[in-house]
Image (cartoon, rainbow, N blue to C red; front, side, top):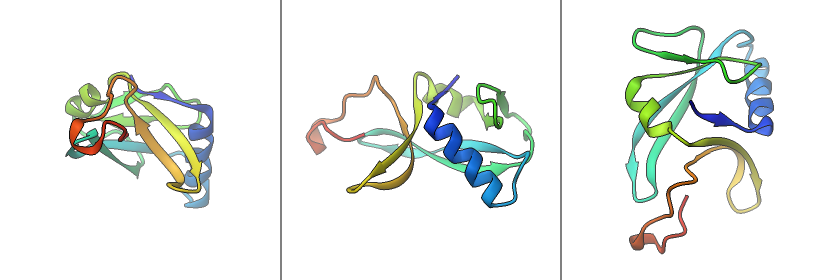
Length: 108
Protein backbone atom coordinates (compact mmCIF):
# COMPACT_ATOMS: atom_id res chain seq x y z
CA UNK A 1 0.00 0.00 0.00
CA UNK A 2 1.36 3.40 -0.98
CA UNK A 3 1.42 6.18 1.60
CA UNK A 4 0.09 9.64 0.83
CA UNK A 5 0.82 12.82 2.74
CA UNK A 6 -2.06 15.01 3.86
CA UNK A 7 -0.89 17.86 1.57
CA UNK A 8 -0.82 15.50 -1.44
CA UNK A 9 -4.23 14.12 -0.54
CA UNK A 10 -5.66 17.64 -0.32
CA UNK A 11 -4.03 18.64 -3.65
CA UNK A 12 -5.50 15.61 -5.45
CA UNK A 13 -8.91 16.23 -3.88
CA UNK A 14 -8.82 19.83 -5.15
CA UNK A 15 -7.75 18.65 -8.63
CA UNK A 16 -10.66 16.22 -8.76
CA UNK A 17 -13.08 18.97 -7.79
CA UNK A 18 -11.58 21.53 -10.22
CA UNK A 19 -11.84 19.05 -13.08
CA UNK A 20 -15.42 18.09 -12.20
CA UNK A 21 -14.32 14.58 -11.26
CA UNK A 22 -15.83 14.45 -7.78
CA UNK A 23 -16.31 10.79 -6.86
CA UNK A 24 -13.44 9.66 -9.09
CA UNK A 25 -10.18 8.21 -7.88
CA UNK A 26 -6.70 8.19 -9.31
CA UNK A 27 -5.03 5.49 -11.33
CA UNK A 28 -1.33 5.11 -10.59
CA UNK A 29 0.62 3.29 -13.28
CA UNK A 30 4.20 2.31 -13.91
CA UNK A 31 5.50 4.50 -16.74
CA UNK A 32 9.01 3.06 -16.97
CA UNK A 33 12.34 3.00 -15.19
CA UNK A 34 15.13 5.56 -14.99
CA UNK A 35 18.39 5.80 -13.09
CA UNK A 36 16.36 7.17 -10.18
CA UNK A 37 14.13 4.07 -10.04
CA UNK A 38 10.58 3.44 -11.20
CA UNK A 39 8.72 6.30 -12.86
CA UNK A 40 4.99 6.62 -12.27
CA UNK A 41 2.08 8.35 -13.95
CA UNK A 42 -1.33 9.26 -12.57
CA UNK A 43 -4.70 9.86 -14.16
CA UNK A 44 -8.31 10.30 -13.05
CA UNK A 45 -10.33 7.09 -13.02
CA UNK A 46 -13.97 6.66 -12.09
CA UNK A 47 -13.82 3.07 -10.84
CA UNK A 48 -11.47 0.12 -10.73
CA UNK A 49 -10.65 -1.58 -13.99
CA UNK A 50 -10.01 -5.24 -14.63
CA UNK A 51 -7.00 -6.35 -12.58
CA UNK A 52 -6.86 -3.16 -10.51
CA UNK A 53 -6.23 -3.19 -6.79
CA UNK A 54 -8.31 -0.66 -4.88
CA UNK A 55 -6.40 1.27 -2.21
CA UNK A 56 -8.67 3.10 0.23
CA UNK A 57 -5.92 4.68 2.33
CA UNK A 58 -7.19 8.17 1.40
CA UNK A 59 -10.40 9.44 2.94
CA UNK A 60 -11.09 11.62 -0.13
CA UNK A 61 -10.67 9.20 -3.05
CA UNK A 62 -9.64 5.67 -4.00
CA UNK A 63 -6.33 4.84 -5.66
CA UNK A 64 -6.14 2.13 -8.32
CA UNK A 65 -3.10 0.21 -9.54
CA UNK A 66 -2.19 -3.18 -11.00
CA UNK A 67 0.04 -5.86 -9.46
CA UNK A 68 3.25 -4.68 -11.16
CA UNK A 69 2.68 -1.10 -10.04
CA UNK A 70 1.80 -2.26 -6.53
CA UNK A 71 5.18 -3.98 -6.23
CA UNK A 72 7.03 -0.86 -7.48
CA UNK A 73 5.04 1.38 -5.09
CA UNK A 74 6.02 -0.65 -2.02
CA UNK A 75 7.28 1.80 0.64
CA UNK A 76 6.75 4.82 -1.66
CA UNK A 77 5.17 8.07 -0.52
CA UNK A 78 3.05 10.40 -2.65
CA UNK A 79 4.05 13.92 -1.68
CA UNK A 80 3.01 17.43 -2.65
CA UNK A 81 5.90 19.69 -3.64
CA UNK A 82 6.01 23.46 -4.01
CA UNK A 83 9.59 24.23 -4.90
CA UNK A 84 11.00 27.12 -6.96
CA UNK A 85 13.37 24.70 -8.77
CA UNK A 86 10.93 21.86 -9.43
CA UNK A 87 7.55 23.62 -9.52
CA UNK A 88 4.31 22.67 -7.84
CA UNK A 89 2.73 19.24 -8.05
CA UNK A 90 3.04 15.68 -6.91
CA UNK A 91 5.97 13.36 -6.62
CA UNK A 92 6.17 9.70 -5.72
CA UNK A 93 9.28 9.17 -3.61
CA UNK A 94 10.88 5.87 -2.66
CA UNK A 95 12.67 6.45 0.66
CA UNK A 96 14.69 3.25 0.14
CA UNK A 97 16.23 4.40 -3.15
CA UNK A 98 19.47 6.29 -2.65
CA UNK A 99 20.11 7.42 -6.21
CA UNK A 100 22.65 6.17 -8.69
CA UNK A 101 26.27 6.68 -9.59
CA UNK A 102 25.58 7.97 -13.11
CA UNK A 103 23.71 11.05 -11.84
CA UNK A 104 25.66 11.70 -8.67
CA UNK A 105 23.42 9.73 -6.34
CA UNK A 106 21.18 12.67 -5.56
CA UNK A 107 18.29 12.08 -7.95
CA UNK A 108 14.76 11.34 -6.74
